[in-house]
Length: 111
Image (cartoon, rainbow, N blue to C red):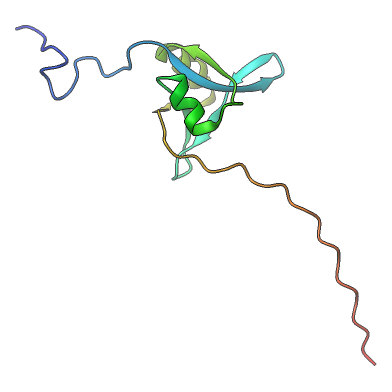
């Protein structure tokens, strides 16, 4: 029996992404660390993109990133209990705006 070619099979023979992944990072105590996100249901997930264009379209041009293979990203996040990997997410919530302090209302005097 021969393995079906990926183009002929509705389910590809190799479910992992081919090529490097572009992984968003943030500064950490020892250099850059992978950013972790949450799914809409609150589960922690590593996020990676298959192109720089997809990364910057979703997270903006100022987002720092590194190239990693999928096994390396999974090995990096597994000790943190993160087993989900989200590829090329198209939506992200904007960063929360900083709260501006509100001046307290003056006390009311009765009588």
